[in-house]
Length: 471
Image 1 (cartoon, rainbow, N blue to C red):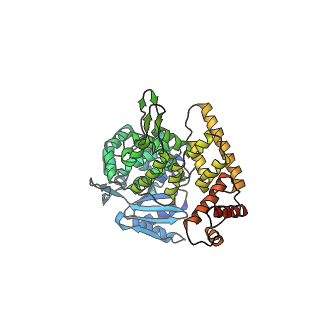
Image 2: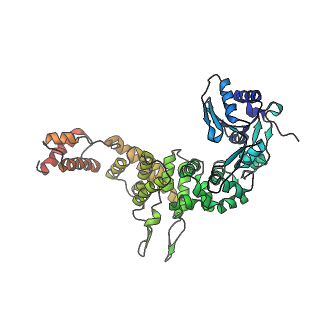
Image 3: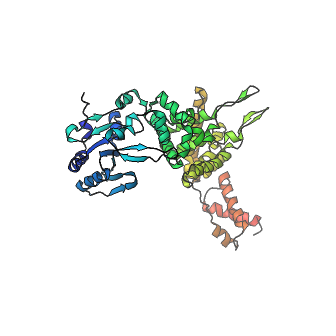
């Protein structure tokens, strides 16, 4: 039975160049994996194309590059038998068809040359084993030995081979299964899901960098909660984010309960994902309550408390980023700041927001005050419509107040109107604690609204404070 033709998927002229190059080298070649999958799902223009050659992928890459007018550089990875060519913002990876075998202590396979079928068998999922022929005899023919098209239609993530073998051989595939299920809104087949749970400890041989790369992709999906719920269900989450797992569960003492902070957190991440594509702000949403587990206490008179959880959580962010080998630069500091300040606008929204309180919020949040407000709005997860509308309305009032105060007082990215050098010169001082005392007093006076954020007013206040200090 002849398989269907998908020649329209191969309209880009690059495919004819690849096909001609393969013919000249007398080797078979196919487009495989994500390009084919995404074409069938109509997921937009591809940025990556994977080509499998029944022969040398490296030689095919060199031949293709020589035929392109731009004469692109060929990046060769001999250890992996692959080569990369960049053409018109598309990355084309060439690999020789191969079969693989694995040792239990590594995800790096022992590789042998193989057939197209061998190569399709080694793929992680049926939907990624789809191939389109670039050969003259059957150009555009779809080769689908594992019914990947049917799984695409059903929305199923399924492995070509027995799932225990697939996941044990390369445990990163467990993360990829959950990531694809999240991105595509697919269901992981029951046997496959069971196999992930059974092989969960194998995740220990995967580098943190690889794990985080998959987490980032889950985080940037439309509904990240699906991925984290699957990570939790398969018990992988305990190996990656024990801090999140610790938030799970509801305790009840003397009839008083607290909400399940794990599922609340996932709601917050979903909420913020509707309003921002900022990866690190989404991370802040994921981690905003991690300090609640270590600070949870029950008091007979007031019930459950989580005092100081924002401060504790911000400290935990550093440890978590360091453990997962994530950047310890301004990105980590941004997440720390958002976690540390996550309750500040909530307090303002509940009470009447004074100018002084708003000035302090803007001063402390600096250029990230809008991000902080976005996080706090996402933190509204109550199902009570009246309460939800009230909170959102209060946050809008705080937002208006921020704009009003900022336009008038220019506190964001605050710089003191009077410099330390001018204080030293005015009072004929050498570096000393008095300079810091005066600078702090001027800042506090501005934030409290005692003086405007202007040079003349600040200078006058400086002279007054200097007199008080006997200078």
